[in-house]
Length: 114
Image (cartoon, rainbow, N blue to C red; front, side, top):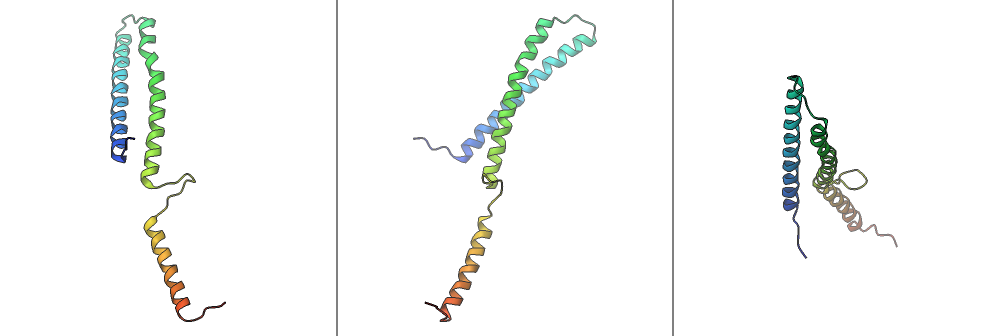
């Protein structure tokens, strides 16, 4: 069994973000090159345009998956549970401590009912 730490998971996610970012940059550069050719009045083959744009669909899917992964990771980091709210454990401990202290005070005064 292999233990995967939060840091490793975040590192892999950051690597994935860099990879997608590089892919988007490369695709943008190719599209800008084609755009410059069109502006210059050069003939651009439709087959070449299709070949350049076909990876865009997969790249969009990868971006959507990455967005989901990042949202889940952020929610875990913030402590947001499935119901959509965050639990502040320090505040919860404080509240429980106060209530226990009130119970101790009440019970130690001898007002025990049977």
